Image (cartoon, rainbow, N blue to C red; front, side, top):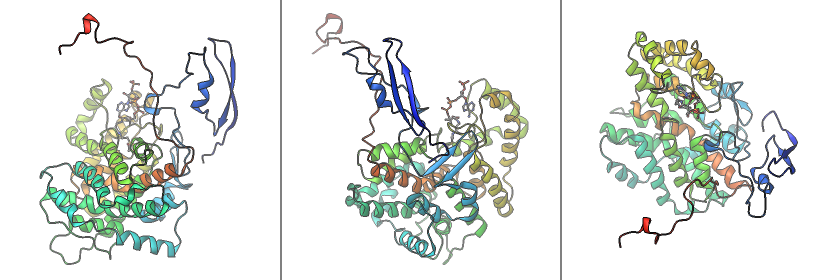
Length: 435
Ligand code: ACO
């Protein structure tokens, strides 16, 4: 729960009828369904609230992630993101998101063993990936293969069973890096590398990506740690577009593989998880620091957006962007400095002094620097959203499970304001159709 637990009532007067209504407030919100009682007469079905893009509508109660966009605060289960990024591992954070508490030593040992046990995918998944064209976008492969997993685990169709849910949660967290690495190796024309259970979650992922002829791949510890931190920063972000999709599909009691394929598809879009890929393309297009003023002028003319800037919730600096800047420096100690960083830093400096960006409250978001790190680590640009998807997996699953368990939740089904034609008939002369 957030800091403000507001209760009380709201009195609304309908100026059409002069009647007043007292609506209860819960956690500082009215229930949209309480508006239904506000009618002008017996034929009126009641007042609706209209909120395209859910700008001001809470779709659920959630105890997982707290975001205060005004103050730049992000907490998972109450823990500040800065502390988790500094002191926890991604698997600990995944456990925290799913269970509400950080694991003790024994719980972590069991959790890690469970995940490691499930990293392998059925051999047929390889054949499935083989069928994709050599230049298939890895996010397209991920969307399809995550959905395909549901056909391997028909038991997943019973999300009401907690044991069934838990098994699929472990499978998905364990198999996402394997699917991602296979998608990458397919596009690179490399043989698939199997998981190595002696490595950490992130170290194993790097091994499956980068292993060549070496019998034992050993990840660089700085890069392994940096990627683990990036996964933590992406692990959850309350009711964003892909999480809302996950909950929405889950609300029909579809299996979690189908729901997560839909969430991955939502993440793919350039306004959401695809933004990190677009930032890299944008920085490459800008090419050098001298071209920045002209580029910013074009953004202000509305020709295109400054990718990696702006956020629906954060109206100050995204706290994840601050942590990522620090991680970037650690990575560059190993890889050498990415020359695009200079363009990004200067772009940020100029944008943050510019009236357009200040007045629109546009600040760098998590994606502004993540791509620069991924590129320095050797990831191709189209793998960036895939990395985001691996990190977001525990968040999607925790939110999905919370939705399934919430007795207040129902199948997602918004209302609409119909603005189309009134009734018409096929036999009217002007609409006659040829038979
Ligand atoms: N560059 C330039 N102008 C922008 C930008 C931007 N990146 N983002 C918003 N604006 C402007 C809009 O043109 C609009 O201006 P107007 O009021 O003068 O018409 C105003 O700011 C509000 O924009 P909206 O689109 O209404 O804001 P919304 O909250 O719906 O969008 C979003 C948020 C999608 C993130 C948007 O800021 C954006 O497109 N950013 C670039 C893409 C990006 O970086 N996405 C990653 C988000 S983080 C994540 O998903 C992990």
